[in-house]
Amino acid sequence: MTSLRARSINACGSSCAVAAKATAHAVKYGGCMEPVNVVLYHNDAGIARVLAADLSRHFPSVNLARSCEEIRPAIARHRAEVLVLDVETSGSRELERLHQEFPGLCIVCTHRLADEELWTEALKHGATDMCLPWNTNDVVRSVMRDRARRAAA
Image (cartoon, rainbow, N blue to C red; front, side, top):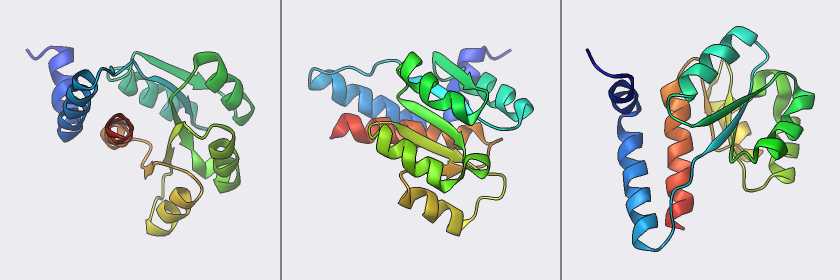
C-alpha cells in the first residue's frame, strides 16, 4: 500500500520537480523555501472542505474563509502567501481589490465554468492562474510555479 506522503508526491507530478529546482536554487543562494500558508474561500462549503483537505496534503496551513468578508482578516491573521479564491462568487472587482491590497499574494482563482475569456480576465486583475475548483493538482501546480518563479527572481 502506498503511503499518503508517496501518493501526494506522485499526485503533484511536474510541480514537484519545479519545487525541487526552486528549493535547490534557494539553498544554493542562501535562501530557503518556507512553509506556505494558504487561505481558501469557496462559496460552496462542500467544495471548500474537499479542496481544503486535498490542499492540506501539500501545504502545512490551509485556512478557510467562510465568507468574502472573512478573506482579508484571514490573510492577515494567518500571514497567507496564497489565496485560493472562488472568483465565480467574489467577482473580478474583488480579485482586483485583493491584488492591490496584497500585492505579494499568490491568488489562484477557481471557477466551475472557467474558459479562456475568464482566465484572461482573472490574469488581468491580478490572479496567478484560474483552475476548476475540484482540480487540486492544477491549484498546487499554479502555487508551486509561482513560488518557484519568486524564488528564482
